[in-house]
Image (cartoon, rainbow, N blue to C red; front, side, top):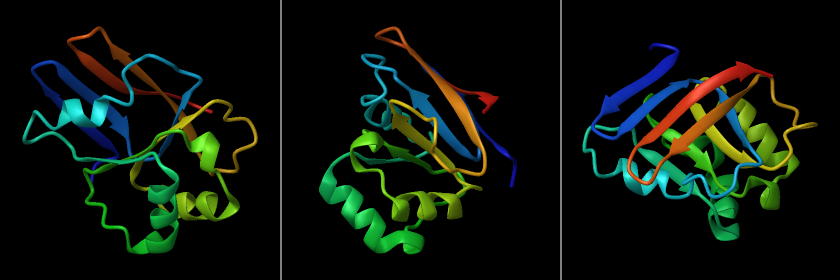
Length: 134
């Protein structure tokens, strides 16, 4: 298994490390639309988007039994609303998978390694890339 998920076709470019990423304080960038946009490419990595209290509760309940293939991307939208010690512990177990977290302030999150992720969407084309290790 490579440490990188790379996909480029049409208007979608994904270049992400298999680790925990933070989208810090980004608003109106298209990140919520990204999983639906990726679905139009049948061979693109699958995004599993968690964004509601019910979905977060289910994630914590199923925990380590959540099926993630090596190319799936777990996207935790609005994580700052639902963060908990149990969620942090669970995500540390996923550190060899690609996890994207929408969180307004990453300072103080006790993950082993966090990278920033950049997302660019111009209304037509998406670019999602790993940036520096924090």
